[in-house]
Length: 275
Image 1: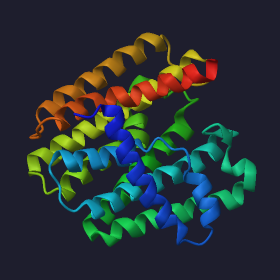
Image 2 (image 1 turned 180 degrees about the vertical axis):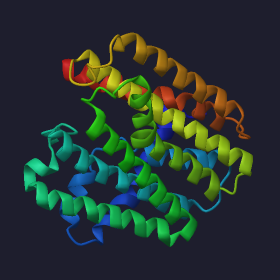
Image 3 (image 1 turned 90 degrees about the vertical axis):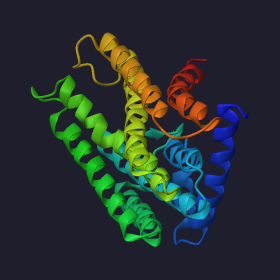
C-alpha cells in the first residue's frame, strides 16, 4: 500500500495536469495559470479520494468536477486577499498587488465562470450543487466581514463562519466524489459529513496558528484551549465518520489519515517560515 503522501501526490499531479490543460485553452490563460499555481489541491484531492474509495468508474468526470472545485477555491482566495488586504499569497505578491483590484475581480469571476461550466458539463445537479456551495461560502465571508469586530462575534458564530466559508467546499467535494461514483445514498450522506469535518479541521488548524502568531481572531478569549479542543473534536469525528463508509482498504486508511495530512500541511508551512 502506498503511503498517504505518495497517494496524495499522485492525485495532485493528475489534477494539476487537467487543471492546466483546461486553462491553456482559455483567454487570459497566463494570468489564470499564475493564479492557480502552488496550491495544496486538498479539495479536489478529497473529491477523487472519495470517488476512488467507492470504486468509481467515470474518472474523467470526477477529474473535471475536482478541477471545478479547485477553480472556485482559487477565485475565493483572490477575493479574500482583497477583502483582508493581504499583500501575499502562497509566498508571492497577491494578485491584486500585481495587477490591481479591478483586474483581479474580473479574473476571479473568470475562474468562477470556468468552474461553473465544468460543473454544468457534468449535469444540472452538479451545477446546482456548485451554486449552493458557492452561496454558502459567500454567506460565510459576509458574516466574517460584518461580524468579526462586533459585539455579536463569539465562538458559536466563528464555528458557523468556518462551516460555511471553508467546510462547505470540502463537504461538497466529498459528496460529489461519492455521487459520481454512484455510492449508496447512506454513503453519500456520510461522505458529506466526513468532508465537512475535514474542512473544519483544516480551518481550525489554520486559525489556531494565526492566533498563536497574533495575526487574527484575538477576540476569542482563551483561544489556545478552544482551538485545540475543537481541532481534536473535528479530527476524531472524521475518523468515526469514515468508519461508517462502505469502503475497503487501503482507502479507509487513506480517509482516516487525510485530515491529519491536511493539518500537518498547515503546521509544516509555519515551521518552514520560521527557519
